[in-house]
Image (cartoon, rainbow, N blue to C red; front, top):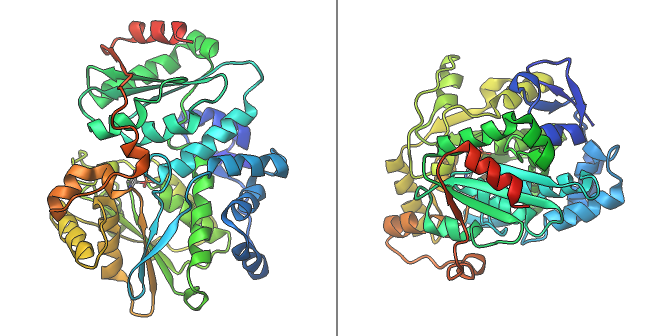
Length: 430
Ligand SMILES: *Cc1c(COP(=O)(O)O)cnc(C)c1O
Protein backbone atom coordinates (compact mmCIF):
# COMPACT_ATOMS: atom_id res chain seq x y z
CA UNK A 1 0.00 0.00 0.00
CA UNK A 2 1.23 3.43 -0.90
CA UNK A 3 0.52 6.34 1.39
CA UNK A 4 1.16 10.03 0.89
CA UNK A 5 1.93 12.80 3.32
CA UNK A 6 -0.98 15.22 3.68
CA UNK A 7 1.41 18.15 4.21
CA UNK A 8 3.79 17.27 1.38
CA UNK A 9 2.10 15.08 -1.22
CA UNK A 10 5.42 14.30 -2.88
CA UNK A 11 6.46 12.17 0.10
CA UNK A 12 5.22 8.65 -0.47
CA UNK A 13 5.87 5.63 1.73
CA UNK A 14 4.72 2.05 1.93
CA UNK A 15 2.73 0.73 4.87
CA UNK A 16 5.78 -0.59 6.70
CA UNK A 17 7.50 2.79 6.62
CA UNK A 18 4.32 4.63 7.51
CA UNK A 19 3.94 2.62 10.69
CA UNK A 20 7.62 2.91 11.55
CA UNK A 21 7.70 6.66 11.00
CA UNK A 22 4.32 7.52 12.43
CA UNK A 23 4.46 11.03 10.95
CA UNK A 24 6.02 12.29 7.71
CA UNK A 25 7.89 15.47 6.86
CA UNK A 26 6.59 18.68 8.47
CA UNK A 27 4.74 16.43 10.95
CA UNK A 28 2.31 15.48 8.15
CA UNK A 29 -0.10 12.56 8.48
CA UNK A 30 0.01 9.64 6.06
CA UNK A 31 -3.07 8.77 4.03
CA UNK A 32 -3.74 5.80 1.70
CA UNK A 33 -3.26 6.64 -1.97
CA UNK A 34 -5.73 4.04 -3.16
CA UNK A 35 -9.03 3.45 -1.38
CA UNK A 36 -10.41 0.04 -2.31
CA UNK A 37 -14.15 -0.49 -2.68
CA UNK A 38 -16.14 -3.68 -2.20
CA UNK A 39 -18.99 -4.51 -4.56
CA UNK A 40 -22.43 -5.22 -3.07
CA UNK A 41 -21.78 -8.89 -3.65
CA UNK A 42 -18.37 -8.83 -1.99
CA UNK A 43 -19.99 -7.04 0.94
CA UNK A 44 -22.59 -9.81 1.23
CA UNK A 45 -19.82 -12.38 1.35
CA UNK A 46 -17.93 -10.39 3.97
CA UNK A 47 -20.96 -10.20 6.22
CA UNK A 48 -21.16 -13.98 6.36
CA UNK A 49 -17.59 -14.37 7.61
CA UNK A 50 -16.57 -14.42 11.26
CA UNK A 51 -14.83 -11.42 12.81
CA UNK A 52 -11.25 -12.65 12.34
CA UNK A 53 -11.66 -13.84 8.76
CA UNK A 54 -13.60 -10.77 7.74
CA UNK A 55 -11.08 -8.41 9.37
CA UNK A 56 -8.20 -10.23 7.69
CA UNK A 57 -9.95 -9.91 4.37
CA UNK A 58 -10.62 -6.19 4.77
CA UNK A 59 -7.04 -5.45 5.89
CA UNK A 60 -5.59 -7.55 3.09
CA UNK A 61 -7.11 -5.14 0.58
CA UNK A 62 -4.77 -2.51 1.92
CA UNK A 63 -1.63 -4.41 2.84
CA UNK A 64 -1.50 -7.83 1.17
CA UNK A 65 1.29 -6.54 -1.09
CA UNK A 66 3.48 -6.17 1.99
CA UNK A 67 2.40 -9.01 4.22
CA UNK A 68 1.30 -12.44 2.97
CA UNK A 69 -2.33 -13.33 3.74
CA UNK A 70 -1.33 -16.30 5.88
CA UNK A 71 0.85 -14.14 8.12
CA UNK A 72 -1.71 -11.37 8.22
CA UNK A 73 -4.36 -13.76 9.45
CA UNK A 74 -2.10 -14.96 12.26
CA UNK A 75 -1.43 -11.38 13.28
CA UNK A 76 -5.09 -10.38 13.18
CA UNK A 77 -5.96 -13.41 15.27
CA UNK A 78 -3.40 -12.45 17.89
CA UNK A 79 -4.37 -8.77 17.86
CA UNK A 80 -8.10 -9.39 18.22
CA UNK A 81 -7.84 -12.29 20.66
CA UNK A 82 -10.48 -10.94 23.04
CA UNK A 83 -14.25 -10.70 23.25
CA UNK A 84 -15.48 -9.15 20.04
CA UNK A 85 -17.70 -6.04 19.85
CA UNK A 86 -21.23 -6.43 21.13
CA UNK A 87 -24.39 -4.80 19.90
CA UNK A 88 -26.64 -3.97 22.85
CA UNK A 89 -30.18 -2.78 22.20
CA UNK A 90 -31.08 0.26 24.31
CA UNK A 91 -34.51 0.97 22.91
CA UNK A 92 -36.38 0.66 19.66
CA UNK A 93 -33.93 1.53 16.89
CA UNK A 94 -31.10 2.64 19.18
CA UNK A 95 -28.21 0.34 20.07
CA UNK A 96 -24.79 0.68 21.60
CA UNK A 97 -21.81 -0.90 19.88
CA UNK A 98 -19.68 -1.92 22.85
CA UNK A 99 -16.02 -1.84 21.91
CA UNK A 100 -14.64 -2.18 25.43
CA UNK A 101 -14.28 -5.89 26.01
CA UNK A 102 -10.53 -5.95 25.41
CA UNK A 103 -7.77 -6.24 28.02
CA UNK A 104 -7.73 -2.54 28.90
CA UNK A 105 -11.47 -2.01 28.59
CA UNK A 106 -11.43 0.61 25.85
CA UNK A 107 -11.68 0.55 22.06
CA UNK A 108 -8.02 1.57 21.90
CA UNK A 109 -7.14 -2.11 22.38
CA UNK A 110 -8.05 -2.79 18.74
CA UNK A 111 -5.66 -0.23 17.29
CA UNK A 112 -2.83 -0.67 19.79
CA UNK A 113 -2.79 -4.45 19.52
CA UNK A 114 -2.83 -4.50 15.74
CA UNK A 115 -0.07 -1.89 15.63
CA UNK A 116 2.02 -4.02 18.01
CA UNK A 117 1.55 -7.06 15.80
CA UNK A 118 2.55 -5.13 12.70
CA UNK A 119 5.66 -3.64 14.31
CA UNK A 120 6.76 -7.01 15.63
CA UNK A 121 6.24 -8.59 12.19
CA UNK A 122 8.74 -6.21 10.63
CA UNK A 123 11.23 -5.99 13.42
CA UNK A 124 14.57 -7.22 12.22
CA UNK A 125 15.67 -10.43 13.90
CA UNK A 126 17.67 -9.94 17.09
CA UNK A 127 17.41 -6.16 16.88
CA UNK A 128 16.07 -4.30 19.87
CA UNK A 129 13.08 -2.00 19.67
CA UNK A 130 12.05 0.48 22.35
CA UNK A 131 8.57 1.90 22.38
CA UNK A 132 8.61 5.17 24.30
CA UNK A 133 5.34 6.91 24.94
CA UNK A 134 3.79 9.48 27.24
CA UNK A 135 0.29 8.92 28.47
CA UNK A 136 -2.40 10.60 30.50
CA UNK A 137 -4.19 7.28 30.86
CA UNK A 138 -5.89 5.16 28.24
CA UNK A 139 -3.30 4.98 25.50
CA UNK A 140 -0.49 3.86 27.80
CA UNK A 141 -2.53 0.98 29.13
CA UNK A 142 -3.53 -0.20 25.66
CA UNK A 143 0.06 0.04 24.37
CA UNK A 144 1.51 -1.74 27.42
CA UNK A 145 -0.85 -4.69 27.10
CA UNK A 146 -0.44 -4.84 23.33
CA UNK A 147 3.35 -5.31 23.55
CA UNK A 148 3.41 -7.31 26.78
CA UNK A 149 5.85 -10.26 26.63
CA UNK A 150 6.92 -9.59 23.05
CA UNK A 151 10.49 -10.67 22.36
CA UNK A 152 13.11 -7.93 22.06
CA UNK A 153 10.56 -5.15 22.26
CA UNK A 154 10.62 -3.08 25.37
CA UNK A 155 8.05 -0.50 26.30
CA UNK A 156 8.73 2.56 28.41
CA UNK A 157 5.71 4.57 29.45
CA UNK A 158 5.91 7.96 31.13
CA UNK A 159 2.96 9.41 33.00
CA UNK A 160 2.45 12.36 35.33
CA UNK A 161 2.67 11.16 38.92
CA UNK A 162 -0.59 11.45 40.83
CA UNK A 163 -2.51 12.70 37.82
CA UNK A 164 -4.02 9.44 36.65
CA UNK A 165 -6.43 7.32 38.65
CA UNK A 166 -5.02 4.52 40.80
CA UNK A 167 -7.30 2.14 38.95
CA UNK A 168 -5.68 3.16 35.68
CA UNK A 169 -2.24 2.75 37.22
CA UNK A 170 -3.11 -0.78 38.29
CA UNK A 171 -4.04 -1.58 34.73
CA UNK A 172 -0.59 -1.05 33.25
CA UNK A 173 1.97 -0.40 36.00
CA UNK A 174 1.65 -3.92 37.42
CA UNK A 175 2.68 -5.87 34.32
CA UNK A 176 6.47 -5.92 34.64
CA UNK A 177 8.59 -8.04 32.24
CA UNK A 178 9.21 -5.89 29.13
CA UNK A 179 6.88 -3.11 30.29
CA UNK A 180 8.60 -0.30 32.21
CA UNK A 181 6.50 2.49 33.66
CA UNK A 182 7.85 5.73 35.06
CA UNK A 183 5.88 8.15 37.20
CA UNK A 184 7.28 11.56 36.38
CA UNK A 185 7.19 14.27 39.02
CA UNK A 186 5.57 16.75 36.68
CA UNK A 187 2.76 17.33 34.22
CA UNK A 188 1.70 15.43 31.09
CA UNK A 189 3.45 18.13 29.06
CA UNK A 190 6.70 17.38 30.92
CA UNK A 191 6.29 13.72 29.95
CA UNK A 192 5.68 14.61 26.34
CA UNK A 193 8.69 16.89 26.31
CA UNK A 194 10.91 14.07 27.61
CA UNK A 195 9.69 11.84 24.78
CA UNK A 196 10.43 14.58 22.28
CA UNK A 197 13.94 15.09 23.65
CA UNK A 198 14.61 11.38 23.36
CA UNK A 199 13.54 11.33 19.71
CA UNK A 200 15.73 14.35 19.00
CA UNK A 201 18.77 12.45 20.30
CA UNK A 202 19.74 10.71 17.05
CA UNK A 203 22.38 8.46 18.59
CA UNK A 204 20.10 7.31 21.37
CA UNK A 205 17.31 6.74 18.90
CA UNK A 206 19.47 4.47 16.79
CA UNK A 207 21.06 2.61 19.66
CA UNK A 208 17.83 1.54 21.31
CA UNK A 209 15.60 1.40 18.21
CA UNK A 210 13.22 4.08 19.37
CA UNK A 211 9.64 4.05 18.10
CA UNK A 212 6.71 6.10 19.33
CA UNK A 213 3.69 3.84 18.70
CA UNK A 214 1.92 7.12 18.26
CA UNK A 215 -1.84 7.46 18.31
CA UNK A 216 -1.85 8.84 14.76
CA UNK A 217 -0.21 5.66 13.46
CA UNK A 218 -2.07 4.50 10.34
CA UNK A 219 -2.09 0.87 11.51
CA UNK A 220 -4.44 1.83 14.31
CA UNK A 221 -6.99 3.32 11.96
CA UNK A 222 -6.92 0.28 9.67
CA UNK A 223 -7.65 -1.98 12.64
CA UNK A 224 -10.58 0.16 13.68
CA UNK A 225 -12.26 -0.14 10.27
CA UNK A 226 -12.95 -3.78 11.11
CA UNK A 227 -15.44 -3.22 13.89
CA UNK A 228 -17.68 -1.06 11.72
CA UNK A 229 -18.11 -4.09 9.47
CA UNK A 230 -18.78 -6.22 12.53
CA UNK A 231 -21.52 -3.79 13.59
CA UNK A 232 -23.03 -4.02 10.11
CA UNK A 233 -23.01 -7.81 10.30
CA UNK A 234 -24.75 -7.70 13.68
CA UNK A 235 -27.50 -5.28 12.61
CA UNK A 236 -30.66 -6.94 11.21
CA UNK A 237 -30.77 -6.91 7.43
CA UNK A 238 -33.93 -4.79 7.23
CA UNK A 239 -32.08 -1.84 8.78
CA UNK A 240 -28.98 -2.04 6.58
CA UNK A 241 -29.78 1.11 4.63
CA UNK A 242 -30.84 3.23 7.62
CA UNK A 243 -27.73 3.16 9.79
CA UNK A 244 -26.67 6.36 11.55
CA UNK A 245 -23.57 6.15 13.75
CA UNK A 246 -22.73 8.57 16.54
CA UNK A 247 -19.12 8.65 17.72
CA UNK A 248 -17.67 10.25 20.86
CA UNK A 249 -14.72 12.14 19.37
CA UNK A 250 -11.41 13.33 20.79
CA UNK A 251 -8.66 13.02 18.22
CA UNK A 252 -11.20 11.91 15.60
CA UNK A 253 -9.41 8.62 14.85
CA UNK A 254 -12.55 6.59 15.41
CA UNK A 255 -14.52 8.79 13.02
CA UNK A 256 -11.74 8.56 10.41
CA UNK A 257 -11.89 4.76 10.56
CA UNK A 258 -15.68 4.86 10.19
CA UNK A 259 -15.40 7.09 7.14
CA UNK A 260 -12.86 4.74 5.56
CA UNK A 261 -15.27 1.86 6.22
CA UNK A 262 -17.95 3.84 4.38
CA UNK A 263 -15.59 4.54 1.49
CA UNK A 264 -15.02 0.77 1.24
CA UNK A 265 -18.70 0.41 0.45
CA UNK A 266 -20.33 0.01 3.85
CA UNK A 267 -23.70 1.75 3.36
CA UNK A 268 -23.65 3.99 6.45
CA UNK A 269 -26.28 6.68 5.98
CA UNK A 270 -24.50 9.26 8.10
CA UNK A 271 -22.02 9.86 10.88
CA UNK A 272 -22.41 12.12 13.87
CA UNK A 273 -19.31 13.49 15.60
CA UNK A 274 -20.14 14.12 19.25
CA UNK A 275 -17.72 16.16 21.37
CA UNK A 276 -17.63 17.46 24.92
CA UNK A 277 -17.06 21.14 25.74
CA UNK A 278 -13.87 20.99 23.67
CA UNK A 279 -15.87 21.93 20.61
CA UNK A 280 -13.34 23.03 17.98
CA UNK A 281 -14.94 20.87 15.29
CA UNK A 282 -18.64 21.71 15.83
CA UNK A 283 -17.69 25.40 15.76
CA UNK A 284 -15.51 24.88 12.70
CA UNK A 285 -18.29 23.13 10.78
CA UNK A 286 -20.72 25.86 11.74
CA UNK A 287 -18.54 28.89 10.98
CA UNK A 288 -15.76 27.63 8.72
CA UNK A 289 -13.28 29.19 11.12
CA UNK A 290 -10.59 27.06 12.78
CA UNK A 291 -10.25 28.48 16.26
CA UNK A 292 -9.20 26.01 18.97
CA UNK A 293 -9.70 27.25 22.52
CA UNK A 294 -7.71 26.18 25.54
CA UNK A 295 -8.42 22.57 26.44
CA UNK A 296 -11.05 22.25 29.15
CA UNK A 297 -11.21 19.39 31.67
CA UNK A 298 -14.48 17.47 31.49
CA UNK A 299 -16.05 14.25 32.75
CA UNK A 300 -15.20 12.62 29.41
CA UNK A 301 -11.48 13.22 29.80
CA UNK A 302 -10.35 10.98 26.91
CA UNK A 303 -12.00 13.58 24.69
CA UNK A 304 -10.40 16.63 26.30
CA UNK A 305 -8.65 17.63 23.10
CA UNK A 306 -8.95 20.99 21.39
CA UNK A 307 -6.71 20.31 18.39
CA UNK A 308 -7.88 16.92 17.11
CA UNK A 309 -4.92 15.53 15.24
CA UNK A 310 -6.80 13.26 12.83
CA UNK A 311 -8.95 16.08 11.45
CA UNK A 312 -6.84 16.54 8.28
CA UNK A 313 -7.57 12.90 7.45
CA UNK A 314 -11.31 13.50 7.87
CA UNK A 315 -11.16 16.44 5.46
CA UNK A 316 -9.06 14.46 2.98
CA UNK A 317 -11.48 11.60 2.80
CA UNK A 318 -14.45 13.93 2.21
CA UNK A 319 -12.44 15.61 -0.54
CA UNK A 320 -11.33 12.36 -2.14
CA UNK A 321 -14.80 10.84 -2.13
CA UNK A 322 -16.43 14.14 -3.14
CA UNK A 323 -18.74 13.93 -0.13
CA UNK A 324 -20.15 17.13 1.26
CA UNK A 325 -18.63 18.03 4.63
CA UNK A 326 -21.99 19.59 5.55
CA UNK A 327 -23.44 16.10 5.81
CA UNK A 328 -21.27 15.48 8.86
CA UNK A 329 -23.21 16.47 11.97
CA UNK A 330 -21.17 17.60 14.93
CA UNK A 331 -22.35 18.92 18.27
CA UNK A 332 -20.90 19.37 21.72
CA UNK A 333 -22.38 18.28 25.05
CA UNK A 334 -21.77 19.94 28.42
CA UNK A 335 -20.92 17.93 31.55
CA UNK A 336 -24.35 18.76 32.95
CA UNK A 337 -26.09 17.24 29.95
CA UNK A 338 -23.70 14.31 29.93
CA UNK A 339 -24.86 13.50 33.45
CA UNK A 340 -28.50 13.81 32.37
CA UNK A 341 -27.94 11.36 29.55
CA UNK A 342 -26.11 8.88 31.76
CA UNK A 343 -29.08 8.94 34.13
CA UNK A 344 -31.55 8.59 31.29
CA UNK A 345 -29.71 5.55 29.98
CA UNK A 346 -29.55 4.10 33.47
CA UNK A 347 -33.32 4.42 33.83
CA UNK A 348 -33.62 2.38 30.67
CA UNK A 349 -31.52 -0.30 32.26
CA UNK A 350 -28.19 0.58 30.68
CA UNK A 351 -25.11 1.63 32.65
CA UNK A 352 -22.88 3.85 30.57
CA UNK A 353 -19.98 6.22 31.18
CA UNK A 354 -19.55 9.85 30.10
CA UNK A 355 -18.05 9.25 26.61
CA UNK A 356 -20.80 6.91 25.36
CA UNK A 357 -23.51 9.05 26.99
CA UNK A 358 -22.38 12.05 24.91
CA UNK A 359 -22.67 10.05 21.70
CA UNK A 360 -26.09 8.76 22.75
CA UNK A 361 -27.40 12.27 23.45
CA UNK A 362 -26.41 13.69 20.08
CA UNK A 363 -27.66 10.60 18.27
CA UNK A 364 -31.10 10.84 19.81
CA UNK A 365 -31.31 14.50 18.98
CA UNK A 366 -30.40 14.08 15.32
CA UNK A 367 -31.80 10.77 14.12
CA UNK A 368 -35.08 10.25 12.28
CA UNK A 369 -37.77 7.78 13.28
CA UNK A 370 -36.89 5.41 10.48
CA UNK A 371 -33.16 5.43 11.20
CA UNK A 372 -31.29 2.67 12.95
CA UNK A 373 -29.10 4.57 15.41
CA UNK A 374 -25.86 3.27 16.78
CA UNK A 375 -23.64 4.98 19.32
CA UNK A 376 -20.18 3.71 20.17
CA UNK A 377 -19.38 2.50 23.67
CA UNK A 378 -15.70 3.40 23.80
CA UNK A 379 -14.87 2.46 27.40
CA UNK A 380 -16.21 0.15 30.07
CA UNK A 381 -18.10 2.07 32.81
CA UNK A 382 -15.77 0.62 35.46
CA UNK A 383 -12.88 2.55 33.92
CA UNK A 384 -14.57 5.63 35.30
CA UNK A 385 -15.81 3.89 38.41
CA UNK A 386 -15.78 6.89 40.80
CA UNK A 387 -17.53 9.23 38.38
CA UNK A 388 -20.11 6.68 37.30
CA UNK A 389 -20.89 5.54 40.86
CA UNK A 390 -21.38 9.12 42.00
CA UNK A 391 -23.59 10.13 39.09
CA UNK A 392 -25.75 7.01 39.05
CA UNK A 393 -25.65 6.43 42.80
CA UNK A 394 -24.91 2.78 42.33
CA UNK A 395 -22.09 0.28 42.67
CA UNK A 396 -20.08 -0.65 39.60
CA UNK A 397 -18.45 -4.06 39.58
CA UNK A 398 -14.98 -4.30 38.14
CA UNK A 399 -14.60 -6.81 35.34
CA UNK A 400 -12.26 -9.71 35.91
CA UNK A 401 -9.39 -8.14 33.94
CA UNK A 402 -9.26 -5.21 36.35
CA UNK A 403 -10.26 -7.04 39.52
CA UNK A 404 -7.34 -9.42 39.13
CA UNK A 405 -4.85 -6.54 39.04
CA UNK A 406 -6.14 -4.52 42.00
CA UNK A 407 -3.93 -6.26 44.54
CA UNK A 408 -0.79 -6.38 42.43
CA UNK A 409 2.15 -4.19 43.28
CA UNK A 410 2.70 -0.99 41.36
CA UNK A 411 6.11 -1.50 39.71
CA UNK A 412 6.57 2.07 38.47
CA UNK A 413 9.89 3.87 38.78
CA UNK A 414 9.89 7.48 39.93
CA UNK A 415 11.80 10.18 38.13
CA UNK A 416 12.21 13.93 37.98
CA UNK A 417 11.50 15.42 34.57
CA UNK A 418 15.20 15.28 33.70
CA UNK A 419 16.24 14.05 30.25
CA UNK A 420 19.68 12.82 31.31
CA UNK A 421 18.13 10.61 33.95
CA UNK A 422 15.70 9.20 31.40
CA UNK A 423 18.47 8.67 28.87
CA UNK A 424 20.48 6.76 31.44
CA UNK A 425 17.44 4.62 32.18
CA UNK A 426 16.87 3.90 28.50
CA UNK A 427 20.49 2.92 27.96
CA UNK A 428 20.80 0.65 30.95
CA UNK A 429 17.45 -1.03 31.46
CA UNK A 430 17.64 -3.38 28.53
C1 LIG B 1 -9.63 7.84 22.97
C2 LIG B 1 -11.05 7.83 23.40
C3 LIG B 1 -12.07 8.54 22.71
C4 LIG B 1 -11.76 9.43 21.52
O1 LIG B 1 -11.46 8.69 20.37
P1 LIG B 1 -10.73 9.40 19.12
O2 LIG B 1 -10.46 8.32 18.16
O3 LIG B 1 -9.49 10.03 19.67
O4 LIG B 1 -11.69 10.42 18.60
C5 LIG B 1 -13.38 8.43 23.14
N1 LIG B 1 -13.69 7.69 24.23
C6 LIG B 1 -12.76 7.01 24.94
C7 LIG B 1 -13.18 6.26 26.14
C8 LIG B 1 -11.41 7.06 24.54
O5 LIG B 1 -10.50 6.40 25.27
